[in-house]
Length: 281
Ligand code: NAP
Image 1 (tube, rainbow, N blue to C red):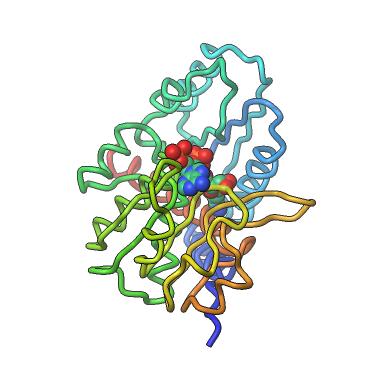
Image 2: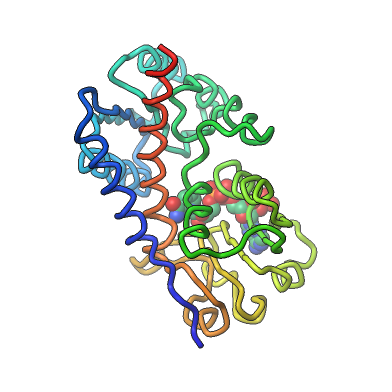
């Protein structure tokens, strides 16, 4: 039997509608500021869709589109201003940043209270130490998809391909916390094929079209494809979807799988940040 499709678009829509209803009855709306530096075409698309989702959910939204050659100190000043702005509960810096700006410095400058991407080392450390606060949106979305389809996580072999701070590492930590046995693979992994064949749940976060083929997937595995590559004007994941779906039990499509969940989780994080800021006033 071919794999069931994990409809991230529909699951994300349900989450966004719930958030919209909640926000509808709020006097003070959750406020998200999104900062983009430079004109990377993919970043423009991501930032615009985040802004659109915010407005649709009834959030207050600010968008900052900064020149590629902005001084690091000016960017830090803007972040500092937003840290103090009462209308803003979440600050998101669209990555990547230009090479002359230190990503570490910038992410550390975002107040941990407003760090809706969960990339500030304070929140990253909280995640690692089992005291989650604001959790990176894409990894959180991946775990939510697994929960939505009702797949058992505890005791299962999970293989994560990719070890970035944005996806690979945090998703591995979240699943470890749920009692999975987690293996993290990367470009220096000796035998990716053998590692992947052991996976009950295989998560690919690389950005290489066709990396995950049918012969490296275990029968009835759950496949989560985080990767995005653009080729011939079309979006592709890391997984050879048409062939892998013949042996997997569940699989995410690209587009329409993990992507919509990232935005839904960002809204959820902003709402969480607002609640916590108000509780701590
Ligand atoms: P990244 O920072 O470039 O990390 C990619 C990872 O893949 C690295 O750890 C790298 O290993 C590993 N890798 C590269 N080639 C490999 C190979 N042949 N075999 C095994 N591992 C390999 O990327 P990222 O930010 O984590 O994003 C990963 C992908 O997810 C991208 O396509 C991105 O566009 C997509 N993404 C999607 C969403 C969404 O909402 N759907 C959100 C975020 C990211 P090394 O560490 O050894 O270099």
